[in-house]
Amino acid sequence: MPNLPTELADPDYRFFELAGDHYACGYAVGAVTDLRQLPAPENPPRALRFARACAAVVRDIYPPLLDEYRGYADAQGRPWEDVLPHFSLHHPSGEAGGCSSLAWRSADGHVMVARNYDFLSSQRSRHLLYAGPAGALATLGTNASLIGGRYDGVNQAGLFAALHLVQAEMPARLSPGLPFHLVPRILLETCTTVRQAVALLLDLPVLHAFNYLLADAGGFAVVEAHPLAKRVREGDGWLAVTNHFQHPDMQRLHGRRTHAHSRRRAEKLRELALRPGEPAWSWAQQVLRDHDTPLCHHDRIMATLWSLTVDITARRIAYCQGAPCQGNFVELAWPANEPPATRVQRGWPAA
Ligand SMILES: [Zn+2]
Image (cartoon, rainbow, N blue to C red; front, top):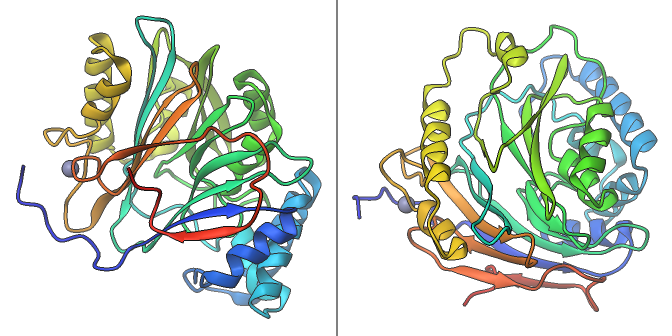
């Protein structure tokens, strides 16, 4: 075990079970969290107009999320203007990110996913949520305090979705669109298959550069998404996704960035995928603990904030609170129906 720098002293790991409709879900989260403050925009009136335009896009695409924002705002006694920035995030996705995901088909034909979510260690909020509002597919997944967001997770139909930040050149003028954190949420609440999710995502206007990994029992694909272009990659037996675009058509959007670390992690995942271990479930958890590349992060700025493994075919999902080399993967019930009551628990479910 390397000498690991101290992680944040008081990370906010919580498990939310959210009963009721979208408004109730937003209210329950708003009542017990703080509104995440975003970087101040250069031109506040223009930023507010842009945020309104993005909210209008969300209303067109998936109106229940506006109810969720409204519930969140009401729980904190805030005017609508306070939560509007969470529709646009005020900023291009310029912060560092280092997620590593591998999807593959195991020897027994199961579709598996292993993933580390890496971000700034200073990001305190690390929430796991189970919700199933009427009219939406029930989901289990994570969020980091952006209203209504999901960073990775599964739904009751057996679809998996996860995001990976990409640092890329952004157009000088962005058209209104969806912020990155609402994309997996919308896909998971409305789509039952990879095919459906890919088709929908290709039609969504996005504000940020991200890779979205999608998997179901039939296979997997990644949509490489940028405000100016989107491409789909499908793996042949496996698919590695990190923090750069791999599709040739998307390379110009990187500008001069080399994405060396992201490429190294993708290469490591490729090597692993070519010689997968068995049983796949425990091998997945083991590879996520790699410190050589590293896939499991412990530098002073970045950390692996959580980790997960999924056997989509068997409908098994396990989350690890914190870095996988230090915590346990805990298997959770696959989302089915609405939780019977709203409940918020400190810490994620422990073994
Ligand atoms: Zn580690």
